[in-house]
Amino acid sequence: MTDGLTRRAAIRAVGAGVLAASLPWFPAPRASAAGRRVDVVGAGLSGLACALALREAGIDVRVWEARPRLGGRTLTDTALIPGRWVECGGEFIDSGHAAIRRLCSGNGIALQDLEAVDVPGVPRDLIGGRLRSGGWADAAQARLAARARSDLQRLGEDRLNAMSAAEWLKGAIPGGTGSPFARYERALVTGEYGADPAALSALWLVADLADDARGAEMGEGPERYRINGGTGRLIAALEQRIGPGRIIRGTRLTALVRGGATPALFLTGPDGPRVERPVRAAITLPPGVLRSVNLRRAGIPAAEREVIRTFGMGTNAKVIIPFTDAAWQRRGWNGDGLSDTALGQTWNATMGEGSGAAAFTSLVGGRAGRDIPGPDHGPAPDAIVRTRLALMDRIAPGTRAAARAGAVVHAWAKDPYARGSYSAARPGQADFPAIAARPQGPFHFAGEHTSDNWSGYMEGAVQSGQRAAREVIARLRG
Ligand SMILES: Cc1cc2nc3c(=O)[nH]c(=O)nc-3n(C[C@H](O)[C@H](O)[C@H](O)COP(=O)(O)OP(=O)(O)OC[C@H]3O[C@@H](n4cnc5c(N)ncnc54)[C@H](O)[C@@H]3O)c2cc1C
Image (cartoon, rainbow, N blue to C red; front, side):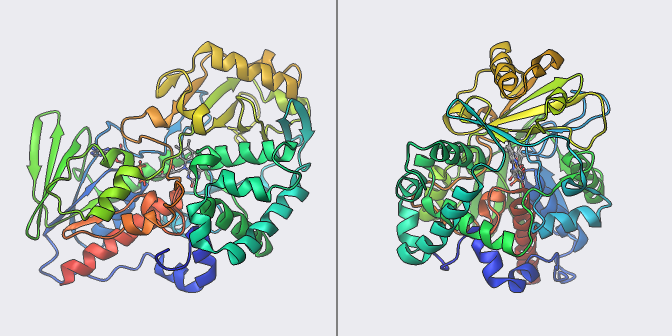
């Protein structure tokens, strides 16, 4: 490991020091720097957070975005049910996610506190063909977290990093690998990380398990908030703050070239190819997409190229089904649950948005997410909706009758501008975020996959974008 700390473990171990580093503090550039243009590639949360920080420091910015829309792996659908919002990508914010919470409050964006939302019913899991009430796995989960804490000490980070999560679970799982809890845990890991446990570094899982227990002791709530009205509101606010004419949509990066200290960005847009020569550039593309950008003349060292070539990505897909009402709640189920069937992780997609029409999310990862039938983003094939409704009916009989037409699927591994849901280190890759974050000459790198503490999360995207902006400003100060 590069610094002996991993992901979320680092933020709490260093505590205030790390939080202070995430404060949006930006040195003022020297007068000569102002007016010189810096380009940002990608208008997801990391790119927009980076561009806003640069603007606030008085730097001229251009943001190049391949899609016709902004937001990248955050996408709010307000058309599925009029008057409701559903999240097709990034959704929940932990109470410890300081940078995104600050970005929201600084831009007038309110959060929805899910602890204050009263969703009738209890969680239910469908595991090993049997219905189990929420809480049945808690004791075993606590034992697994305790084991994670001791294994971090006993085995050490390097050994855990070399192992897969599947290998670690084999020895650590309470009740053995054939137990219902083992099935539960495998489904949980596959949904949370988007990767099958055999394809995930054990260190990522073990550090998170150990850290979740510490976080709970400190009263921190995972997935406590959503953005009121949807992540799209934050994206629109950032776009407005960055200012008109600075974000260019429908224009794709095809190559990066470094000639001495000067970067050249080769782009292609509606008017054909173009070359831009800013003074510096922040590249915020996910690794799977960066793989298809020509980097041969970008001066990127072998270790970084290896990261770009091989960094694991989750393959999560969401199936979102509209209903005339949250019928499952009338049958005592609040919608929360985990299943080792096609349902995966589930929740009420419109919780706290009022009574009446509702939507339900089923999130799958691993092979199930990668191979899900249908488009990348669009109407869900009937077969996958029928399967999910039948399973919902087993959990809350009669629910299916309230389903409406128009279910959608969001299969992020098929999306050519995402190539996955979020980073999920394969065995041996736990230090990849730190390597991916290193600046190379005039190029700076951001995106959730470059965040040591919060890779995978919107928090990691925002923190890394702001970190890249600080690097740029420091270099412009000379
Ligand atoms: C299904 C799902 C569920 C999730 N749930 C949560 C959650 O509950 N909580 C949470 O915190 N996070 C969650 N996430 C993760 C979160 O959404 C991401 O970590 C975050 O949005 C990534 O932001 P980013 O800026 O790093 O990357 P992106 O949002 O991917 O931004 C990169 C941008 O670059 C653009 N681009 C791509 N190729 C090119 C090119 N060649 N040229 C120019 N532009 C290009 C893309 O279109 C995109 O806009 C979820 C993600 C998914 C997919």
